[in-house]
Length: 346
Image 1 (cartoon, helix red, strand yellow):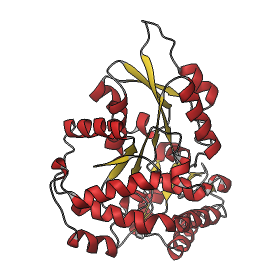
Image 2 (cartoon, rainbow, N blue to C red; image 1 turned 90 degrees about the vertical axis):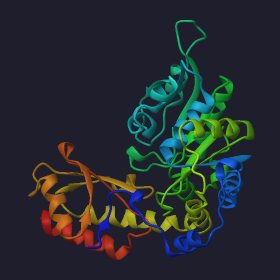
Image 3 (cartoon, helix red, strand yellow; image 1 turned 90 degrees about the horizontal axis):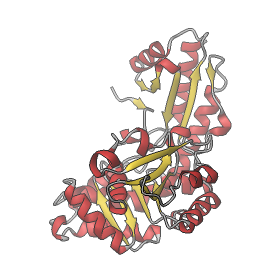
Image 4 (cartoon, rainbow, N blue to C red; image 1 turned 180 degrees about the horizontal axis):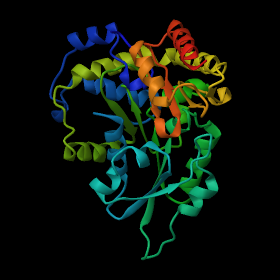
């Protein structure tokens, strides 16, 4: 059965153009710097973001931890959101791998960390405290419903970091979605950051991989960290080829995913058993809650939809679901999903 898979945009598979490029691309040993396809991808990514250099890594999680360890020493501290991917979903990597402490501050409904909260978390220069080295933002902010961070906010955080001599890292797993939603090019949107990591394997459809961008010295250090983590992938140009197609062809079509997410949200809002804030849907992620008086439990709803070839993901104990649109979800799929949910919940 071919599923309508709304669990995440990580479930996307490569496009025909990607498969073609992967089959034909030249490769070499990347650890020796000899894979022409990886070199091209890294240079293309750096150019797109207005940074000096790039580094291909296996995943967004690897990109974030490499960026943190390339910036911080053991005993240093990073500031990030208490519902950020770095804090919640990356296995405590800064502490596990680098002895780096994390100070989580509250995430606002729009995915931002208040400037006052960031500044209050910056440690004084005191022997009793870890040294604050880095602020980490997430754009778009996934657990806040894919909220894109405004340019003015990112610039303000960058100014705050410069004031306190701190680095700024952006977990930009879906930063191209943020760029489309805000109408701001990714280079300008991440100008204030000292490092950015972005995923090729989410809404951009590549099968694997992320890229870190930053200045030359940072990327040189990041390359050493990647090697220490076992990230020297040798002839990985085969997968990097799909990443080049992703940057060339997939970033310009993300508005379609956003439109389908909005279409889905509006359709679900017409079902009495569902609670959803349509106005909060800004990119390709939406959340909805199943009302207590719904005729089916969250688990029953998910199971029956799966039987119909529709996959959704939720925190069943909270009666909360997350749906994510992507390249392989079309408007006809959206209408089918809404109709089937209506039949199950009314």
